[in-house]
Length: 338
Figure 1: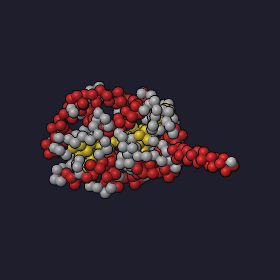
Figure 2: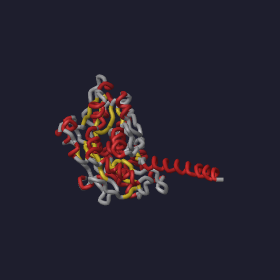
Figure 3: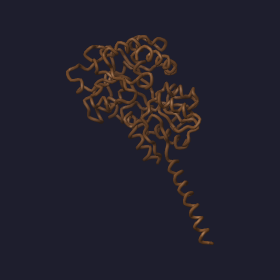
Figure 4: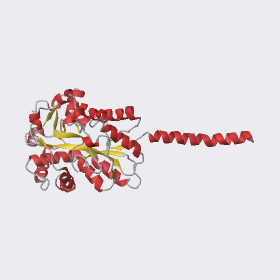
């Protein structure tokens, strides 16, 4: 009888132990939406998070629009713990009630205007929109210097941009072009007309990160951020150039948020603390982004940016107004361009 009880106890204890072990493993995971390893060197950031906190962050290749759609679909039973978004999507996510307030360590070092006062989102780095060029793939075709250059016949079939109705980087390109060509958040006619004209050149329009396609030469010219081009040039050793168009461009922040009712909220908070730490910010700087904590930029990283005289053509915009204009622009783009 005693042997039977002992055996029964073991049979009960073993599953309980396995459940406990499984819970411990799960507790060391934080799900991040839109943390693609090929973008902004999230690969190194994810590795550092694991090394310094013990928390595993599985890579995720959604774009900002797809991430927000998923957060809304899962709002009754969230899967993600944190999310990385273009600022306009983060503002919308807060309005949609799928984020929760959290002020990470280093909060006070984030400039006003680049964080929600309650902590629903906060900037971690910024990028400057421009023209990324695989010079080898261009051959004898000259490197373009302006937005309007891309409309010339010689660039037919060579230009790519991410879908501005879905991907944040695509919408940033549209706003940059619109502002540069005389439009504003109430008037997107210049951008719509530019995209209509570009269709005559058979552009390539992927929905998600197209870095690898630029490097391979499949897309010789891509509307993208400075940090992608610098990464290609200085880290991957590719014959790539970044151009800040003569007409001008914009600078935009990327932000992170804690998901409302996150299943692993404690781990999510630790991830947010780390990406804003001196170590986490240095990773962004070494990936050629402008970290929100400027002290994290090394002299070497700074030296690889284009001259300040070129960056003088890049400006900030009213990001709340940019968020308000996103849906109307997307609707016009889908109706009139694609």
